[in-house]
Length: 144
Length: 124
Image (cartoon, rainbow over all chains, first blue to last red; front, side, top):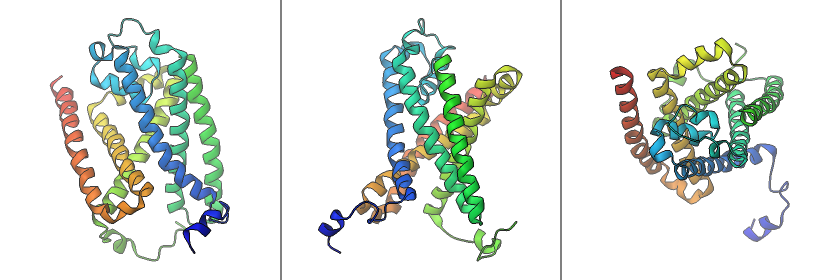
């Protein structure tokens, strides 16, 4: 099959399934998390982390830019760290990370559960867990 | 229990997957470690109370911090290697070299950080 011909086929004809979609999602969400963490790191440094926080606290902020992660540092005014801008960034990171993580757990479970029915139950539970953890995370981020 | 393997456990343990197999296993351990930690961390800050305080004493322990830092750093660096190789399939030819580069980045970064965490943990 020539390259030209493959390109004219529809996605499903090229074998695009949910599993392949999630294969792409896992890799692209990893890049997205790299970008968001770097974004949080640079943002923290711009807001004065260099003089007011130690390295562990800066990383804690970068991995999840939630204001409670800077409350025990020497930052004099936490208002800029609690802005809607950072809450939106943290929400984006949360949703991407929860989806990436829950799908990872499904991949691991698939390797050890021999019955098709068992794998289906795990998939159902994973959707429930994903929605629940996303909701809890958003609640924590927007009420802290 | 109901699991049927084509090979015995002993044969499985003797499987010599070498470098790539090691990164696969460590990637799983790191991912699971992070998933469990983040779930407990979110639930404890959501529920609060005595349980939350107890969980915090575990997080502040230096041994736990070394473990979770290993999980995060290895999963992140190995994940970046997988992503790069998968998105540029021509590079898969050099996957063993890529794993060597991965260790060259991971070991010094983790080693220095672990040394600092342990020395502060023990020295106060």
